Image 1 (spheres, rainbow, N blue to C red):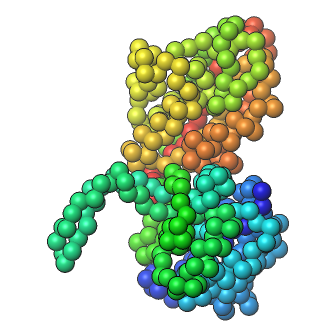
Image 2 (cartoon, one colour; image 1 turned 45 degrees about the vertical axis):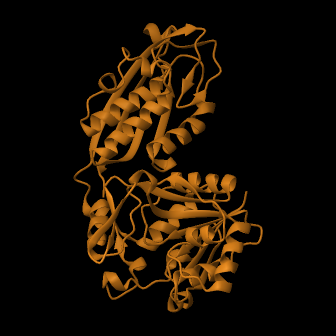
Length: 386
């Protein structure tokens, strides 16, 4: 699959009042645009990037836009966002199967979110990242409430937004013919009659529009000094017995024995779950998912970990990174580690590079060394959500 990315960076950030295009303002030692571009260039699914810029920057671009490993093309943006996207779309490779559109002003996008949105678009034709609404939503008319909207049916749209090439081409052509005014490309696609799938967005993937947004983003980045960073540790151990499946982070491991437990006994996810709870001061896995509760019998470790991450987010925390050591004499796990890390990154909502999993033996010592048990030590870091 060939994936082209359009980064919408043609605006001038008038509402920010910075005196220069906001996409060039620094956050943690790098501009918004540079942070955004580098994340897309790291994403394994991305083949090329087209950046829509103010016309004067196309002729004299910043150095970070030149000499990248993947092709990066520059185009002059138009008066409206949709004009910039149309100009950039014309420069994407004809062989592109999926085209992704992202705002340069969302510099905290993750590789995991990019990968999930692309996968959904490939399957459904169009997909957007979006967040659920937690507050009660009111529709107003002349400063009075007209009606209350069902919040369970409402989401807050983000980017990236991804589309099969033919879907986006049809939507852009319809917009050209009708001169429709839209606020994002998903709206164009909706108006053209195509369904748009919703992918779970990330609270950290904020759009920087105002001076207050910029201050919060800088606080969240390295130059703000993440004094709010908190670390938790977790540990789990299970006996290994015949007739049980051996699963780590949703990956089935070929083995004659598997861990015994009330749930799926996934020591890696259980240790990480406790690490997330510990960092967020939310108790432990036994408090939230007790083995006396039949709801959790056979529960997948990834599901429990995802629930822990959601609880941490509800408490105001965002995952930063995770590290774990799985200790087992056999089977050997090295071949499974890449898939394990990919699953964990998706569940934790972080970049693949923010997840580390190592496998060690116990050198023949004790129950683990005899092959009777498996254990895991894990740490996770969280920070206050921006």
